[in-house]
Length: 263
Ligand SMILES: [Zn+2]
Image 1 (spheres, rainbow, N blue to C red):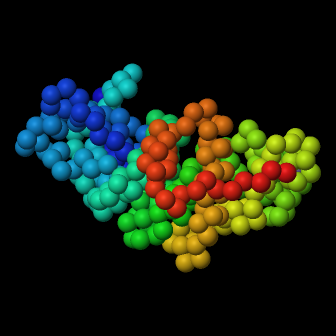
Image 2: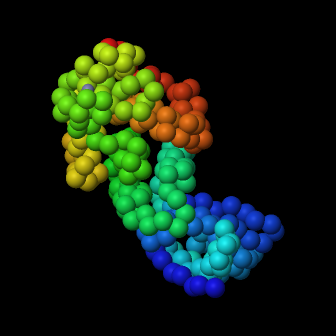
Image 3: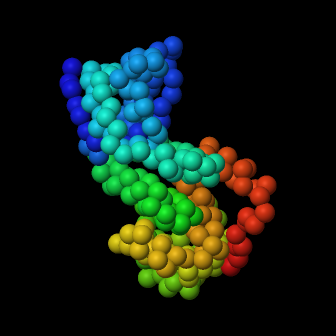
């Protein structure tokens, strides 16, 4: 048996039997972990008030070989994300961020970059960064860290440098190609120079700095559409929380589908 301790971001908390809870958390050192918090549902549990989704906490746990679930011995909340979860939109956004980590981060693999991305995105939204901007930044970065969606610098088909004014997303959503290759494969969707610019600028630019010169809503809508296609192509399914978000906001006015233009 091994005792471990790490700073963690709590991802998910679900009830187990009458008295316990299962907690999924993200660490820098060991990626995603799942563990049982014994007695966490009891009235005077030592976990009381500590198990907050997206809260940052010091977690200590015990591991046994060949066991999927670790045993959590203590959780000490350091900072809460409750301010992000005070309205429906914030709750949906939280679920969407967590869904990405659940899908893209492996168990027991160092995940420092994913940890920093989730931590900084949650903090930025709490600090008032535009939620649409933060969501697009996060989803584009998750795809980049997962190695499925590199920055649009060169065409994967022919190797030419991509001009911002001549980029297209192939119909399968697998890659962004140059104009000549888009003509050849057909059915590619033109990507605006503004969206290309955004996908390049997220490299080396902090979210708070992007917020000072925030892209337009239509550019962010386009980035959402691109990331959704790439993600779906990679996962071969849609994130549950994304479907819920679309269904929830589709009934609201002012949310038209982003315009697309085919070559
Ligand atoms: Zn090309």
